Length: 333
Image (cartoon, rainbow, N blue to C red; front, top):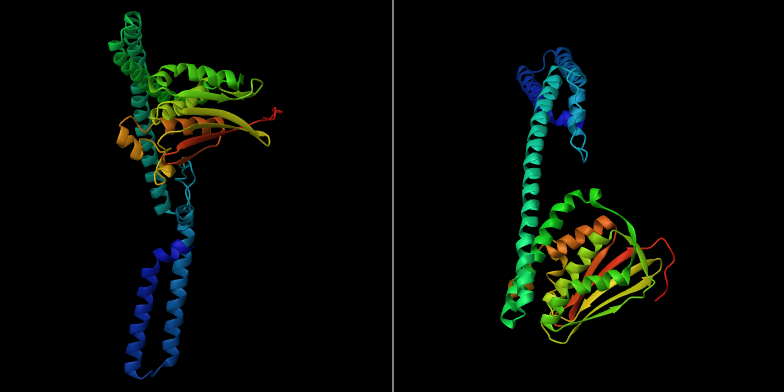
Protein backbone atom coordinates (compact mmCIF):
# COMPACT_ATOMS: atom_id res chain seq x y z
CA UNK A 1 0.00 0.00 0.00
CA UNK A 2 2.85 2.40 0.83
CA UNK A 3 4.47 1.83 -2.57
CA UNK A 4 1.08 2.25 -4.26
CA UNK A 5 0.45 5.62 -2.60
CA UNK A 6 3.95 6.81 -3.44
CA UNK A 7 3.58 5.82 -7.09
CA UNK A 8 0.19 7.62 -7.30
CA UNK A 9 1.21 10.69 -5.38
CA UNK A 10 1.31 12.73 -8.60
CA UNK A 11 -2.33 11.81 -9.32
CA UNK A 12 -3.41 12.89 -5.87
CA UNK A 13 -1.48 16.18 -6.09
CA UNK A 14 -2.97 16.83 -9.53
CA UNK A 15 -6.53 16.32 -8.28
CA UNK A 16 -6.03 18.55 -5.26
CA UNK A 17 -4.49 21.19 -7.52
CA UNK A 18 -7.63 21.14 -9.66
CA UNK A 19 -9.73 21.40 -6.50
CA UNK A 20 -7.62 24.36 -5.33
CA UNK A 21 -8.03 26.14 -8.65
CA UNK A 22 -11.76 25.47 -8.58
CA UNK A 23 -11.94 26.90 -5.07
CA UNK A 24 -10.10 30.01 -6.27
CA UNK A 25 -12.54 30.47 -9.12
CA UNK A 26 -15.52 30.05 -6.80
CA UNK A 27 -14.03 32.54 -4.36
CA UNK A 28 -13.71 35.13 -7.16
CA UNK A 29 -17.38 34.51 -7.92
CA UNK A 30 -18.26 35.12 -4.26
CA UNK A 31 -19.45 31.60 -3.49
CA UNK A 32 -22.96 32.35 -4.81
CA UNK A 33 -23.80 28.64 -4.88
CA UNK A 34 -22.04 27.00 -1.94
CA UNK A 35 -24.12 23.85 -2.23
CA UNK A 36 -22.86 23.24 -5.73
CA UNK A 37 -19.30 23.97 -4.60
CA UNK A 38 -19.46 21.41 -1.80
CA UNK A 39 -21.08 18.93 -4.14
CA UNK A 40 -18.21 19.33 -6.62
CA UNK A 41 -15.68 18.81 -3.81
CA UNK A 42 -17.49 15.68 -2.63
CA UNK A 43 -17.80 14.30 -6.13
CA UNK A 44 -14.12 14.98 -6.86
CA UNK A 45 -13.02 13.22 -3.65
CA UNK A 46 -15.35 10.29 -4.35
CA UNK A 47 -14.11 9.83 -7.90
CA UNK A 48 -10.49 10.02 -6.72
CA UNK A 49 -11.14 7.39 -4.06
CA UNK A 50 -12.91 5.09 -6.53
CA UNK A 51 -10.09 5.51 -9.04
CA UNK A 52 -7.44 4.67 -6.44
CA UNK A 53 -9.37 1.67 -5.11
CA UNK A 54 -9.96 0.20 -8.58
CA UNK A 55 -6.38 0.85 -9.64
CA UNK A 56 -5.01 -0.72 -6.46
CA UNK A 57 -7.30 -3.75 -6.80
CA UNK A 58 -6.20 -4.40 -10.38
CA UNK A 59 -2.49 -3.88 -9.62
CA UNK A 60 -2.34 -5.05 -6.03
CA UNK A 61 -0.35 -8.19 -6.82
CA UNK A 62 2.33 -6.17 -8.59
CA UNK A 63 2.73 -3.65 -5.77
CA UNK A 64 2.80 -6.35 -3.10
CA UNK A 65 5.43 -8.26 -5.08
CA UNK A 66 7.59 -5.16 -5.55
CA UNK A 67 7.25 -4.23 -1.87
CA UNK A 68 8.36 -7.67 -0.62
CA UNK A 69 12.11 -7.85 0.18
CA UNK A 70 13.91 -10.37 -2.06
CA UNK A 71 14.96 -13.67 -0.54
CA UNK A 72 18.50 -15.05 -0.55
CA UNK A 73 17.75 -17.13 -3.65
CA UNK A 74 16.48 -15.41 -6.82
CA UNK A 75 12.73 -15.81 -7.33
CA UNK A 76 12.07 -18.30 -10.12
CA UNK A 77 8.26 -18.34 -9.78
CA UNK A 78 6.28 -16.04 -12.06
CA UNK A 79 2.52 -15.51 -12.41
CA UNK A 80 1.80 -14.04 -15.84
CA UNK A 81 -1.94 -14.80 -15.55
CA UNK A 82 -2.65 -12.96 -12.30
CA UNK A 83 -3.56 -9.32 -11.71
CA UNK A 84 -4.12 -6.63 -14.28
CA UNK A 85 -2.58 -6.21 -17.68
CA UNK A 86 0.34 -4.19 -16.29
CA UNK A 87 1.07 -6.92 -13.77
CA UNK A 88 0.94 -9.66 -16.42
CA UNK A 89 3.28 -7.69 -18.69
CA UNK A 90 5.72 -7.13 -15.79
CA UNK A 91 5.65 -10.84 -14.91
CA UNK A 92 6.35 -11.84 -18.51
CA UNK A 93 9.23 -9.36 -18.66
CA UNK A 94 10.72 -10.65 -15.40
CA UNK A 95 10.38 -14.24 -16.60
CA UNK A 96 12.32 -13.44 -19.80
CA UNK A 97 15.01 -11.63 -17.82
CA UNK A 98 15.30 -14.59 -15.45
CA UNK A 99 15.70 -17.00 -18.37
CA UNK A 100 18.48 -14.87 -19.84
CA UNK A 101 20.11 -14.66 -16.42
CA UNK A 102 20.00 -18.45 -16.00
CA UNK A 103 21.44 -18.94 -19.48
CA UNK A 104 24.38 -16.65 -18.72
CA UNK A 105 24.96 -18.38 -15.38
CA UNK A 106 25.12 -21.80 -17.05
CA UNK A 107 27.51 -20.50 -19.73
CA UNK A 108 29.82 -18.95 -17.12
CA UNK A 109 29.65 -22.09 -14.97
CA UNK A 110 30.67 -24.18 -17.97
CA UNK A 111 33.57 -21.88 -18.76
CA UNK A 112 34.70 -21.90 -15.14
CA UNK A 113 34.47 -25.70 -15.02
CA UNK A 114 36.62 -26.06 -18.14
CA UNK A 115 39.13 -23.57 -16.77
CA UNK A 116 39.31 -25.42 -13.44
CA UNK A 117 39.93 -28.75 -15.21
CA UNK A 118 42.71 -27.19 -17.29
CA UNK A 119 44.42 -25.61 -14.27
CA UNK A 120 44.08 -28.85 -12.30
CA UNK A 121 45.70 -30.87 -15.07
CA UNK A 122 48.40 -28.26 -15.55
CA UNK A 123 49.29 -28.31 -11.84
CA UNK A 124 49.61 -32.09 -11.86
CA UNK A 125 51.77 -31.93 -14.98
CA UNK A 126 54.06 -29.38 -13.33
CA UNK A 127 54.55 -31.62 -10.31
CA UNK A 128 56.32 -34.27 -12.37
CA UNK A 129 59.26 -32.12 -13.61
CA UNK A 130 59.54 -30.59 -10.12
CA UNK A 131 59.92 -34.06 -8.62
CA UNK A 132 62.62 -34.88 -11.19
CA UNK A 133 64.49 -31.65 -10.36
CA UNK A 134 64.20 -32.43 -6.66
CA UNK A 135 65.69 -35.92 -7.15
CA UNK A 136 68.58 -34.54 -9.20
CA UNK A 137 69.35 -31.93 -6.55
CA UNK A 138 69.26 -34.56 -3.79
CA UNK A 139 71.61 -36.84 -5.74
CA UNK A 140 74.08 -34.02 -6.27
CA UNK A 141 74.04 -33.03 -2.63
CA UNK A 142 76.18 -29.96 -3.36
CA UNK A 143 75.57 -26.79 -1.30
CA UNK A 144 75.27 -24.69 -4.47
CA UNK A 145 72.16 -26.68 -5.40
CA UNK A 146 70.46 -25.72 -2.15
CA UNK A 147 68.97 -22.55 -3.62
CA UNK A 148 67.44 -24.61 -6.44
CA UNK A 149 65.85 -26.89 -3.87
CA UNK A 150 64.47 -23.90 -1.99
CA UNK A 151 62.87 -22.55 -5.14
CA UNK A 152 61.36 -25.92 -6.09
CA UNK A 153 59.88 -26.18 -2.61
CA UNK A 154 58.31 -22.76 -3.04
CA UNK A 155 56.86 -23.79 -6.40
CA UNK A 156 55.45 -26.99 -4.86
CA UNK A 157 53.79 -25.00 -2.08
CA UNK A 158 52.31 -22.64 -4.65
CA UNK A 159 50.95 -25.50 -6.75
CA UNK A 160 49.41 -27.15 -3.69
CA UNK A 161 47.74 -23.88 -2.80
CA UNK A 162 46.25 -23.67 -6.29
CA UNK A 163 44.96 -27.25 -6.06
CA UNK A 164 43.29 -26.72 -2.70
CA UNK A 165 41.85 -23.44 -3.88
CA UNK A 166 40.21 -25.25 -6.79
CA UNK A 167 38.98 -28.09 -4.58
CA UNK A 168 37.45 -25.69 -2.09
CA UNK A 169 34.43 -25.22 -4.37
CA UNK A 170 33.79 -28.96 -4.15
CA UNK A 171 34.60 -29.31 -0.46
CA UNK A 172 31.51 -31.38 0.41
CA UNK A 173 32.23 -33.99 -2.27
CA UNK A 174 35.84 -34.33 -1.05
CA UNK A 175 35.06 -34.46 2.67
CA UNK A 176 35.77 -37.61 4.71
CA UNK A 177 35.66 -37.61 8.52
CA UNK A 178 37.94 -40.05 10.35
CA UNK A 179 39.44 -40.41 13.82
CA UNK A 180 42.84 -38.73 13.84
CA UNK A 181 45.55 -38.73 16.50
CA UNK A 182 46.26 -35.02 16.71
CA UNK A 183 49.89 -35.34 17.82
CA UNK A 184 50.75 -37.74 14.98
CA UNK A 185 49.13 -35.44 12.43
CA UNK A 186 51.00 -32.41 13.75
CA UNK A 187 54.34 -34.27 13.77
CA UNK A 188 53.71 -35.41 10.21
CA UNK A 189 52.98 -31.82 9.17
CA UNK A 190 56.09 -30.55 10.94
CA UNK A 191 58.14 -33.22 9.17
CA UNK A 192 56.79 -32.01 5.82
CA UNK A 193 58.15 -28.56 6.72
CA UNK A 194 61.50 -29.81 8.04
CA UNK A 195 63.51 -28.23 5.20
CA UNK A 196 62.08 -24.83 6.06
CA UNK A 197 62.85 -25.36 9.74
CA UNK A 198 66.43 -26.34 8.96
CA UNK A 199 67.04 -23.45 6.57
CA UNK A 200 65.69 -20.89 9.03
CA UNK A 201 67.32 -22.67 11.98
CA UNK A 202 64.03 -22.77 13.85
CA UNK A 203 62.88 -25.38 16.34
CA UNK A 204 59.37 -26.87 16.45
CA UNK A 205 58.06 -27.65 19.93
CA UNK A 206 55.00 -29.91 19.99
CA UNK A 207 53.10 -30.06 23.29
CA UNK A 208 50.21 -32.41 22.59
CA UNK A 209 49.34 -35.61 24.44
CA UNK A 210 49.55 -38.80 22.43
CA UNK A 211 46.03 -39.92 23.41
CA UNK A 212 44.22 -36.87 22.00
CA UNK A 213 41.96 -38.01 19.16
CA UNK A 214 39.76 -35.75 17.05
CA UNK A 215 37.12 -36.42 14.41
CA UNK A 216 38.05 -34.48 11.29
CA UNK A 217 38.99 -34.61 7.64
CA UNK A 218 42.71 -35.20 7.92
CA UNK A 219 43.67 -34.03 4.45
CA UNK A 220 41.93 -30.66 4.68
CA UNK A 221 42.85 -29.96 8.28
CA UNK A 222 46.46 -30.98 7.77
CA UNK A 223 46.75 -28.63 4.82
CA UNK A 224 45.34 -25.78 6.93
CA UNK A 225 47.78 -26.51 9.77
CA UNK A 226 50.63 -26.69 7.26
CA UNK A 227 49.74 -23.23 5.96
CA UNK A 228 49.80 -21.78 9.48
CA UNK A 229 53.14 -23.42 10.30
CA UNK A 230 54.64 -22.26 6.99
CA UNK A 231 53.54 -18.70 7.74
CA UNK A 232 55.07 -18.95 11.20
CA UNK A 233 58.38 -20.05 9.68
CA UNK A 234 58.37 -17.36 6.99
CA UNK A 235 57.96 -14.55 9.47
CA UNK A 236 60.37 -15.83 12.10
CA UNK A 237 63.69 -14.43 10.86
CA UNK A 238 65.41 -14.86 14.23
CA UNK A 239 67.64 -17.96 14.19
CA UNK A 240 67.17 -20.30 17.12
CA UNK A 241 63.62 -19.19 17.95
CA UNK A 242 60.83 -21.71 18.51
CA UNK A 243 57.47 -22.42 16.98
CA UNK A 244 55.29 -23.88 19.72
CA UNK A 245 52.33 -26.07 18.85
CA UNK A 246 50.15 -27.11 21.76
CA UNK A 247 46.61 -28.23 22.49
CA UNK A 248 44.61 -27.45 25.62
CA UNK A 249 41.15 -28.52 26.71
CA UNK A 250 38.64 -25.76 27.31
CA UNK A 251 35.40 -27.28 28.54
CA UNK A 252 34.31 -29.80 25.92
CA UNK A 253 36.44 -28.18 23.24
CA UNK A 254 40.04 -28.55 22.24
CA UNK A 255 42.04 -25.43 21.43
CA UNK A 256 45.02 -25.86 19.13
CA UNK A 257 47.51 -22.99 19.41
CA UNK A 258 50.40 -22.37 17.03
CA UNK A 259 52.74 -19.68 18.36
CA UNK A 260 55.82 -18.21 16.73
CA UNK A 261 58.42 -15.79 18.06
CA UNK A 262 58.61 -13.79 14.86
CA UNK A 263 58.06 -10.24 13.76
CA UNK A 264 54.35 -10.11 14.62
CA UNK A 265 51.53 -8.42 12.75
CA UNK A 266 50.58 -4.76 12.84
CA UNK A 267 47.37 -4.15 14.81
CA UNK A 268 45.87 -2.34 11.80
CA UNK A 269 46.38 -5.47 9.67
CA UNK A 270 44.92 -8.02 12.11
CA UNK A 271 41.24 -7.55 11.16
CA UNK A 272 42.08 -8.21 7.49
CA UNK A 273 44.58 -11.08 7.61
CA UNK A 274 41.92 -13.61 6.57
CA UNK A 275 40.83 -11.58 3.55
CA UNK A 276 41.82 -12.99 0.12
CA UNK A 277 44.89 -11.39 -1.49
CA UNK A 278 45.61 -9.26 1.59
CA UNK A 279 49.37 -9.21 2.19
CA UNK A 280 49.66 -6.48 4.78
CA UNK A 281 52.76 -4.65 5.93
CA UNK A 282 54.78 -7.85 6.40
CA UNK A 283 53.94 -9.14 2.93
CA UNK A 284 55.12 -5.91 1.33
CA UNK A 285 58.24 -5.83 3.49
CA UNK A 286 59.36 -9.44 2.94
CA UNK A 287 57.72 -10.09 -0.44
CA UNK A 288 56.82 -13.69 0.44
CA UNK A 289 53.07 -13.42 0.80
CA UNK A 290 50.39 -14.21 -1.79
CA UNK A 291 47.57 -13.22 0.53
CA UNK A 292 45.83 -16.58 0.03
CA UNK A 293 47.32 -18.80 2.76
CA UNK A 294 45.36 -17.53 5.76
CA UNK A 295 42.30 -17.02 3.58
CA UNK A 296 42.31 -20.73 2.72
CA UNK A 297 42.93 -21.63 6.36
CA UNK A 298 39.90 -19.57 7.40
CA UNK A 299 37.68 -21.08 4.68
CA UNK A 300 38.71 -24.64 5.53
CA UNK A 301 38.22 -24.13 9.27
CA UNK A 302 34.78 -22.63 8.69
CA UNK A 303 33.74 -25.62 6.58
CA UNK A 304 35.08 -27.97 9.25
CA UNK A 305 33.22 -26.03 11.92
CA UNK A 306 36.38 -24.84 13.72
CA UNK A 307 36.39 -21.22 14.92
CA UNK A 308 39.76 -19.60 14.26
CA UNK A 309 41.32 -16.45 15.68
CA UNK A 310 44.69 -14.74 15.60
CA UNK A 311 46.51 -12.53 18.10
CA UNK A 312 49.84 -10.84 17.59
CA UNK A 313 52.30 -8.38 19.08
CA UNK A 314 54.81 -6.63 16.84
CA UNK A 315 58.34 -7.79 17.62
CA UNK A 316 57.14 -10.59 19.92
CA UNK A 317 55.22 -13.08 17.83
CA UNK A 318 51.87 -14.37 16.63
CA UNK A 319 49.44 -17.01 17.90
CA UNK A 320 46.83 -18.70 15.76
CA UNK A 321 44.11 -20.44 17.78
CA UNK A 322 41.79 -23.07 16.31
CA UNK A 323 38.91 -24.36 18.44
CA UNK A 324 37.96 -27.97 17.75
CA UNK A 325 34.53 -28.92 19.14
CA UNK A 326 34.63 -32.30 20.84
CA UNK A 327 31.66 -34.60 21.34
CA UNK A 328 33.56 -37.17 23.36
CA UNK A 329 35.55 -37.05 26.58
CA UNK A 330 39.08 -35.62 26.34
CA UNK A 331 42.07 -36.21 28.49
CA UNK A 332 42.66 -33.03 30.51
CA UNK A 333 46.00 -31.52 29.71
